[in-house]
Amino acid sequence: MCVRKGHEEVAHTMARSQNGKAARARVITFANQKGGVAKSTTAEAFAASLTARGYAVLVVDMDAQPGNLSMHVGADKSLPGTLELLALRRPLRREVVRCVQPTRSFGDVVSANEELDEADRRLNSRLGRELVLSRALATILDDYDFVVVDTPPALQVRTLNAIAAANDVIVPCTADSSAIAGMQAVIDCVDEVGEVVRGAEPRVAGIVVTRYDARNNLEPELFDKIAKIAAEHDTHLLGHGVRNTVNARKAQSNGVALGEFAPQSTAAVDYEEAVSAYLASIGRKGRKSSLR
Ligand SMILES: Nc1ncnc2c1ncn2[C@@H]1O[C@H](COP(=O)(O)OP(=O)(O)O)[C@@H](O)[C@H]1O
Ligand SMILES: [Mg+2]
Picture 1 (cartoon, rainbow, N blue to C red):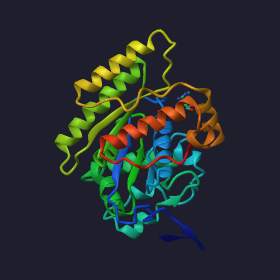
Picture 2: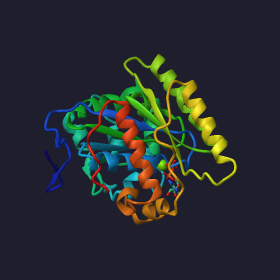
Picture 3: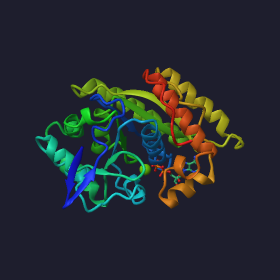
Picture 4: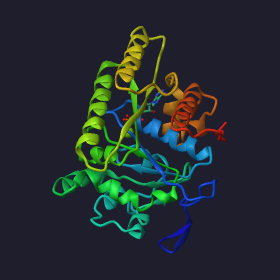
C-alpha cells in the first residue's frame, strides 16, 4: 500500500505481510514501571527481528523521552504521530494512516516527540480514556502481523492505553530489585486492566531479563527470583536472559537496531532466542530471521 506523505509517495509496510493474506495483528506492549531496563531496546529488537522474519510490523512509540525509539529509527518528528493518534475521537482508518510513517529498520512507526506528555493531560479528561489507542489501532490491525508498543517508565494513562490495547504484554526486567518491583506493578496492572476495562484482554506473555551479567554476584539470584515471580503469575521467561554488552549501547548511539549493528553479539543472539520463544508460545513458528 502507498500513502501520501506531502507530495511524495511513500511505500508502507501496510498490507505487505509476506503470507499475502490479510492478517489481524497481535499487539505486543513492552512495559516496566522502571526506566533504563531496556524497554525500548527490547521493543526495537523484537520489531527488527519480526520484520526480518517476514512479518509486517508497526511500532507505536508512546515514550516521549529524548533518545526514544522514534529518534533511533530516524522518524520525522514533524509529521503526525502518537500525539495526533491519541487525539482522534472517532478514529477513521484514513486519519489513523496519516499518523503512520515508514522506517529504515523495520516496518512502520507511529512516532513520538517530546510533546507527547501533553497527551496524558488531554486523555485524562476523556470518557473511555483507557481505550483510545485500542480503538485507533482497530482500524489498521488487518494491515499488520504485529503491532509493537513501547511505553514510558510510568503506569500513567498512556501506558494504561498501551496495556488495554495489548494481546500480549512483555516485561523487560533487569536483575535488580527496583526493576523487579516495576515488573510486579505491571503484572498487577495487566490483571486490573483485564478485570476493569471492558473489551480489554491483555495477558503477560513473558518476561525478558535484560542487561544480564551473570558474573555480578547478585544477578543470578535475582534472575531466579524473576523466574519464580513469573511462574507464580502464570507466565514465564522468554529465552535465558539478554546479556549485558557494550554493543547494545554502541548500536543505540549509531541509531541502528542491535541485530543489524552487531548480529553476532551476545545480546543480539539472546534477543533472537527471546523472539523465537515468544513466537513458539503463540504457535507461530517456521520463519527464520534474515538478520543473521
Ligand atoms: N543488553 C544490553 N547491554 C548493555 N546495555 C544495554 C543493553 N540493553 C540496553 N542497554 C542500554 O541501556 C540503556 C537503557 O536502555 P533503554 O532501552 O533506553 O531503556 P528504557 O527504554 O527501559 O528506559 C541504553 O543506554 C541502552 O543502550
Ligand atoms: Mg524507553
